[in-house]
Length: 116
Image (spheres, helix red, strand yellow):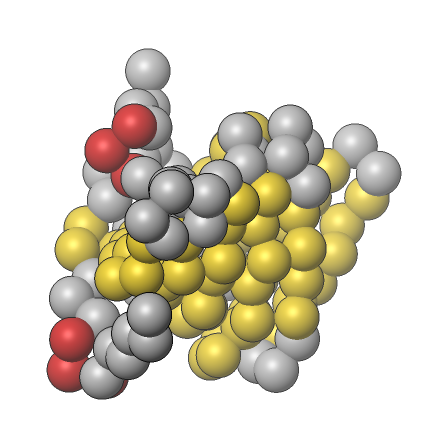
């Protein structure tokens, strides 16, 4: 199977989470739910505490962000490729804006995550 997502088909939707103004879209999800590919946009300054219950690779398309962990701070800028391993506790800090392509394994679904 081959799947293409045109820029006009990204359909980012708000994801309600405390501390962040963020929109997400996962237009590609593998048939076995083992992988998803999509976009994340932090469109306002944000500070988000997040524990990853999936592996995530991401490419910063525009803007920048920092990922804070117990091991320190990593800054990612446009063009940088990153990876966050499952079970990593983070604080994601966006000073202005960040737009990224993400690949998650297993497939991530915002509907499964809450702020409680």
